[in-house]
Image 1 (cartoon, rainbow, N blue to C red):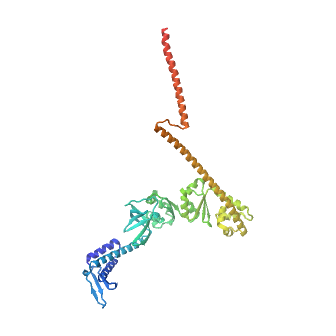
Image 2 (cartoon, one colour):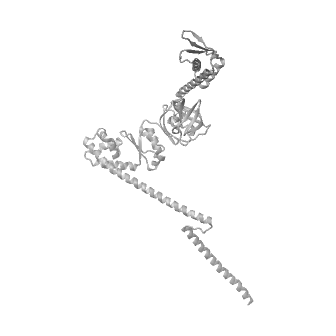
Image 3 (cartoon, rainbow, N blue to C red):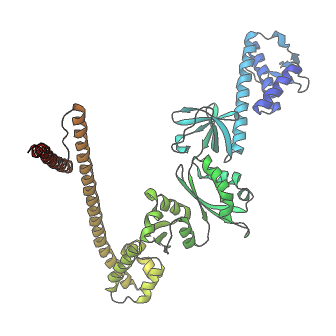
Length: 477
């Protein structure tokens, strides 16, 4: 052993991020294994080895039974012990490297890293991140996003675990924390905790809603996240491949927060039912589709952001639901207006709500007597069945009407397509095209006009010819 060996150890330690003392200890253990192989010994305490960390001087010895120590020259060890030492060194170095990777990426758990795309394996993207290969399963990828070998990939370290003989680093671009880290990188106020991200809901590749608040009254949370002319939010959207991001102003009041979360739709009224964890939202007819969003995306994200089940109604639907509830409970003797008001304050707006909350709420919150609460629950239950059947019939009728309209539209389109195909075929074959009725009528009118024109022209020609013939005869006479 010499200085060159120490320099090699230092290089491995620096490149592989492995402690230098561990590498020296591995080399000492490899030399002990080589000595045991040479002397065919099973005793782990029989041999010892020591390497001087500065000079690289190696000392190998054997502990004899009589207590004496016998120095063993390395030159005496043969080819097979040398091969054994090599295998032990490689194995121990790999174990140290694996432990180093596990320790390094465990500290970076939840951080955003930048790597290089290598290949796809069974749908999972393999990304080279520093010294490790990271795997991004299909479930952690943004739908529709494709990387090519050599592309830069920015992702979140989701999980680090040891599998067999390698360290598996699981990466993600679809996790909500990836958005949070991007905001921390692009918005200094977020990283400095002046602006706090209170809640977040995401559908990767499509849309994200994020609720923010500021601890400094001079800092506008929404404006700071958007940036000047949208510069900050644009960088995040570009990184996500065009995914839409709605920044919502946080409010401790659930009613205001729900109204903000449903933007850009304008909310008329919010009714909360704490017993059911449900919020009933009233919006105008022209705002209904906007509040629901494409395939229910807007209301679904708003519900996840706020933690409330959201039910959206138009004013007519809301009034009809209240009317049915009032007509149902008014039939019961002993129910007064104050009880109805308390039910409305609790967010109980339909006969279905009465069934869901049960007798306990009517007794404790609405302060109904036991007999009255049982009667109200029974009456609302029977009415709910009738209303449910009626709603089911209306739904089936609407579906049938839509199916008929769709079938009629398909039939009309098919007839027009067939007529166009026949005309095209006749023109190609050189035959007389069979035109639609309107075309035939127009052609017949055109023929009649041209025939009349031809007839008039013939009569005029005859008259002119007669006049030409008769004039010279008069001159002769």
